Length: 253
Image (cartoon, rainbow, N blue to C red):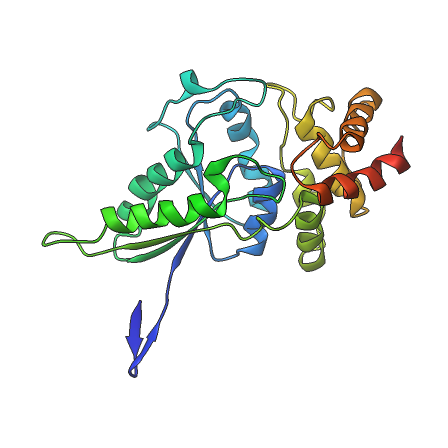
């Protein structure tokens, strides 16, 4: 905070946890003043993410703070999606210690932006997590004789939106689909987009729904499986996203 002419103004430094995926590429555009931070925690897909990390960012003319020597959580992952319990808590604490404090040492107010969608089910990217993590950070950084107090606020600006709606919001303001095609969302360790995994299907459908030409097409089998799971109401936790997805899938299958 700063006080000018007797008026207190909130001046927060924004930090966006950036992965190079579809959601974070859109978020980077929608938050032009945020510093982009990528934490390579040496997970299953981190090397692949890092290899494509700067493509979308370069089209946005943005730099990315790369953290790659601090954290190794590879042994804690599980499943095809490389699920990591408490992942965002690790990433937030790492970003604060490596980026916020050393680089922006004079700043005292930070806003940490997490990418989340309406269909997300993990508790480390919901509103309760954001509130409690903010409280914890503020308690630990309340200041003392040797250091000034710092305040942190974890925000989830797209938590109420589906992936299709996030792309729509991005496209209305940006109109440059190449940025989203340069993003990488895939469960294959080597291919840019395998066209078979859940993440590829969601990206394709989100772009197709917004009449954006996607630079790959998932297999018919993968899209058919997605369609059936949407019909069965087992694809994700958001009924709205499943309804939106079915409209697209009925047209492409």
